[in-house]
Image (tube, rainbow, N blue to C red):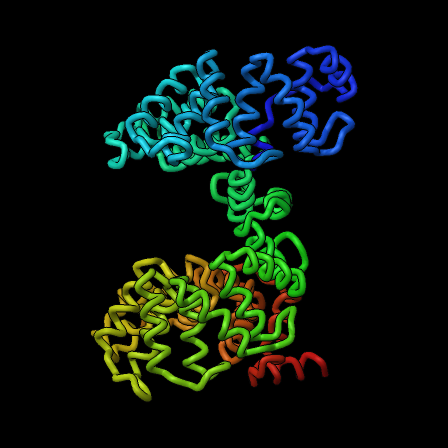
Length: 520
């Protein structure tokens, strides 16, 4: 961070070149040599003591860039003891020579109360002066104040003015400004039209300039395919660099890539390592993932007590995924004494934060009640509807099921079909399996339709592992029949035989008999 603050572009010369002229009293050479020692380049190791020695020599010659850099050294205690008075003196000398960046750092001293008392009026005065002089950091900071408005500083929101200031900073290659402009295009603020493609271009540009936040954002974009085509290799590239620079959410996303096998083979050992690093960095959203690894013994020895400890730490800090995980432990007695009432308490905490899994689980628990928990079908349906409204596929299917069976809702086939179809069309394999069977058989809910049956059955078998064996056997038998008799697709006896054998493997009696006949 400090290197980024101090580093100003220096021509690519060897330190010995600058040493030669610095020793002759050239102030620019002194400054450039100091920069080599700050950055550890030009053939010398990083050495803040040597850097401040040469900066001091250049300051004695009233060289403004050296005044700024040495002022920052005193401000942050780099190579010298912290001395806000010295920092103030040096920065003011550079400010008086018209240096915009010195003006910006003075405004920060008024903002933070370093050497001078906190003074919001003087902070804004110097911030605006630095922006008017063209300092990119000042342009960005002032732009953000106008973009969002600031009651603290008495700035009325003016999104258009804010965007213009941020754009000015971005033209100066300020990576943070480029990133903020990318966010603005993502949201469509300040007179900008929402433009995910432009947003992605800017975020990637900021990442290529080395901006830490942008590296993580670019990785997330390519990982999720939001604003760009999903590209796991690009996601991994950006996230790896961000993780090396200690960005916690990048560590967590790398764990996800290894855990789910995104662009690589699944690797629980690597997933565990990255989740552990994210947790060590204090990233709350990684606690639940790491807890699950301990709970099920994935990439680490099974340890339910450790899982509960991790869930509880993050749950108490307010993370909904951990609250949901802790609720699951209390519901099932994993690492704690089984306590359904306590499970409901944590599920409700997570549900209040919009955790769809918890809402859906509360529906199941409250629908039936249990030890320490009263049955409440009305509250159960409220949670179910809330999760369904959030497009949570399992809740969509469950709501459709309730309309189909008419136990706690009035039976309504059209509503049942609407919600089940939405879940299936969203890619929920279980719903695809059920609808495929319904359309094949022509159940009460729908008329027989082999085209739709084949469509849904085909989708179901793409993720067969998520469907229970009894239902899966029926799915395999029916899709096998589709291929055998050309129902909703072209006849293909090879695929018909394959799926019939799959149905037999999962215990479908008719298919077992058919396979026996075929093998005679």
